[in-house]
Image (cartoon, each protein chain N blue to C red):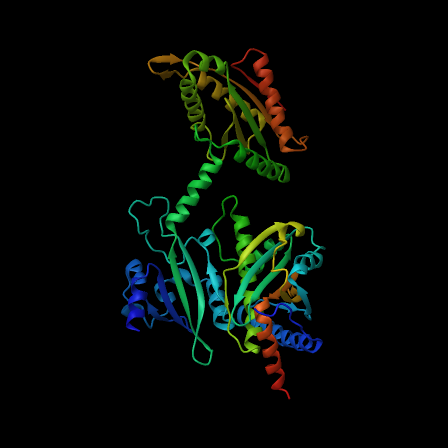
Length: 213
Length: 301
């Protein structure tokens, strides 16, 4: 954590993007094959930001949504950071239908919200786990995860706190648009690496490239 | 290893290891104790052979995602209540038939980082869930009378109103209050007033259907929501309320007190833009009942 400024080169960004492409492709294939979740993950975009710029950037990126739900999950390993899965308002209902919950029992008042929240959480957990897991696998790491947290139906300006990150630190932000194939649901996945994993990430990118040289 | 296995057998948490075919590889003492199934009996068997209720799409999906992606899965108590149907550990727990559990699944890997198994942890959160229930109850009930409070009434009224408008169903509201209640307080004291409030609300709560809602709206004012009831039926019911309360003798410290109530009734009949207006109409009706001499029912459609 000694170096306050990390310089990430264009080449490194390109490799990272390539790794994300491969990882997300594998994640999507496995999701379809193993648990019948058909998701299309678009080409990711990578930004290197100062911690201080992060909140503004995220708000700007999701400003098209009037209300949204965010699932947050931290991943811890040498590759470490936070994943944010952003769904537009109403996605919870669609996800309940997509997961085709086995719940035959009737729900008392208030439980439907709970079911939506749980579905958001489950889908978030699975999607984040698949994407981050495949990425860290390619980077030669194994990560663990915090339990997912979910903030439901909030305005974009209220949902993202200002002090998301140490303002001095470097954050690499990877953004992907995803859609579920058979459903009208799309959203964004943001992966934000922490400052102290940037150096490790750069080494891993170099190692990754060596395989092909 | 021996220290670890002692630890695994003494921690107050259920620990299970399942292989890739979801056969049990490990079953700690906590699981033995609560399930009544000895480790040697279940090890090697499919988990579903002993717990068929776990064989759901959701559980399988989560196991597969742990085994494929190496992520973690969480089964919170809030929605699932429990994974394993175990009896509650406490003899004094009466709210839940089964132990409330918070469960997690995660991957276990070999030296080459290949996922070979998954673990399952089971935490008893019955006490916590019980506290939460109590807090939720407190949050929607009036402390004195035990009927619903105003906050709950307003939430419920809006929900019921929307539903009944959407499906063009009958829906009525009765507002009532105790006549000359201030006089009761002034003459007999506030403790007596509280006693009367409890007596009146308790009596009326016993007269309504399970699907109706009785709430304390304010001081001595109550509101009753009547789903699937038209204004005529609601007016008949209000009249029964009136007669019952008028015929009721409250004995407070050897003093016999009789109170009456005035009631206003309104019902959904298409022209109400919002639940507030429906409530306002019942309140206007109540005001009219008061103005025309009290101890009576006025309906305004």
